[in-house]
Image 1 (tube, rainbow, N blue to C red):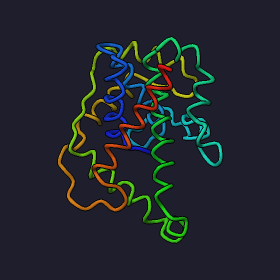
Image 2 (tube, one colour; image 1 turned 135 degrees about the horizontal axis):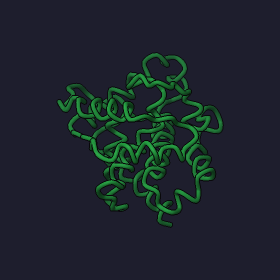
Image 3 (cartoon, rainbow, N blue to C red; image 1 turned 180 degrees about the vertical axis):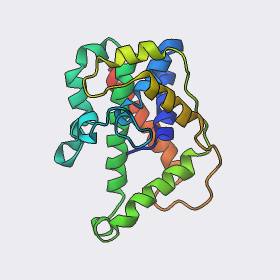
Length: 206
């Protein structure tokens, strides 16, 4: 899984092609974080849902097909360019792409023998890359975002949730992490995320 700053970084890159502005951009950015909002990792929501629910059973052999499962269920809304649904879809897309790429770079013996460290290596490299960026979210259009979120059965989002999400994102540290990359590099990350965003746009606009 990717952290929220990475999700926002890639969402802004994708929006260079989608061109959402104002309320639609707010919808897209908040929707891009919705799969994680109810899981209690970053905020403590009134309703806590399992990852398997919000990420469409994204475990085991079915993991790779998660974005397609969401797309198949909400195809009409996504095809009509509903920004909130597109944001949600892109979150699932990035999660799958990143985890698939990360696992491909790790020898299975290392995954098994050093599994306690592997997750830390992933977060170490992610932080080194993303912490030089700064993101904020709008405090406008929250009521309409909450209302539109009702179209997605897998989440339950309140106005308080959005306020907490905005506060959390606004307070994310923007200091550059010190350290060394373990698996990735800055150039590899930039190329990888560029390709991930390009592939998503190719699918949506194809």
